[in-house]
Every structure is written in structure tokens, then in C-alpha cells.
Image 1 (cartoon, rainbow, N blue to C red):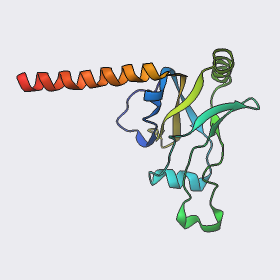
Image 2: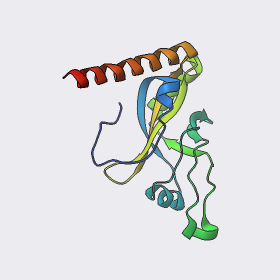
Image 3: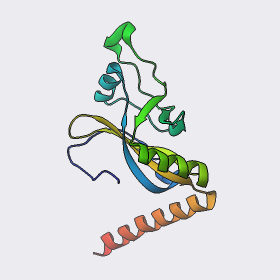
Length: 157
């Protein structure tokens, strides 16, 4: 269900820390309900989803703690930068996500915020499990070994 790597996607924000802190199990593309000044601010490439998460409340999916800064030319008609934003997913997908979160104790983590080829704001959400400290150390060790391997091959080859 993950979106394919498309060259005509405009990436606005990426949560790089999520892949280090969580084991990603499944990804899902969701729409995001925005107001006009939020869209203009996103088009200028300003957003932060690093500390954000998705939560199922009142039978809907919400993006909590994401920051989309105010759009300066809007003046008094601006939006609240850290307001909860409704995520748009199909009801079958919503039930699956809610079940996984409640039953298995997983977390919904946003990975990327982007505009698709039609110019619509989308967010990639991952169903993830938190890593323990020893898992993070192993991931760092593997990454360092891969880097050292590539250096050795480059120097010899």
C-alpha cells in the first residue's frame, strides 16, 4: 500500500528520525484536511512533522503536533500552526489501523508530507513498533559496517 517512488512528487517534510526510533511494519498514504493558508505555507516548503504522531479519536484519524507555520501574507486570516488536522482514509483502513494500535500497542508515525502528481497534499503514515535501545545500537552498528564496507570496496576497486 506504500506510495511508489515517483519523480513528480514534491516532498515538503520528512520524518527521518522515525526509521531510527521505530520498526516500520506497514505504510499508508492518507489525505490531509487543510485550510487555504496551510496549503500556501506547504507550497513554500515549510512544515515540520518530526515530533508528530497520528491518533484515532472519535472514530476519525487525526495528525497531532505537526507544525505548519503561518503564511505571512494572510494577515488576520491565518491558521493555528499546531492545530490537530484530520487525516482522510477509507473506513476499512481506519478500522485496521485502530485495531492494530489498540490490540498490539503499535504507533502511527508520519513519515513524509508531500504533494502528489495532481497537486494534492498527502501524508505517508507508518504502522510501527518502538525500538528498544539495543535495537538502535544494532542498527547503528550495521549502518557503520555498511559504510566501512563501501569505503573498502571503493579504495580497492
